[in-house]
Image (cartoon, rainbow, N blue to C red; front, side):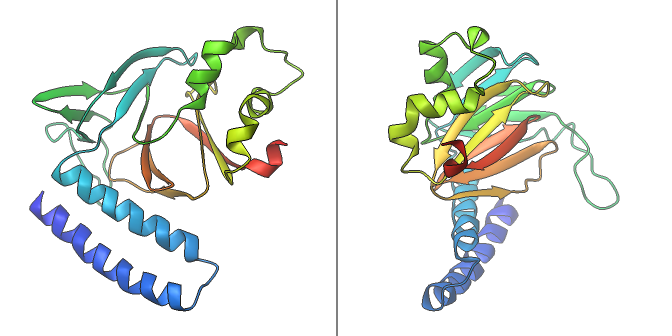
Length: 212
């Protein structure tokens, strides 16, 4: 872990240098530099004290199986099952969720974990029966009508789907960046400085203006 934190600190130092130059002379890559910086900071927090994650798993139909809310959690590849190929890429999809003195081991079904963000899909499902949704109106557009006051001030909408293509989560933000991770079948996002982790799922990032 110390080696990983040291690597993060080196990256953070280099990013800060680049960031200073970017602020002095803005470029098209300005937003991506901030995303890279935020990703490194969140990685350091995760490795040192964990993140206050809400973690949910889903079946293929998009039905939520379970959900836990933690004050401090870290998600990583299970060390006992870890195996890499000749290029150093992780081959095992078995992951561990460490929180407090507890550990959950997970593999297979779709999982999302996030902190500091609102899952609009959950709120929408509380007010509407999605299975009775008018098929002539795309679900995301219908959600936009419900949350237009909140979404219109955001530049991006992130939609997460189960492996069978059923929507399970929707997030909105101004600055959205996507990052690789050492975990197999896993993608990390930074949305306005907050972490979203997606395991075994499809995703699309939409410009909010395209939903109007």
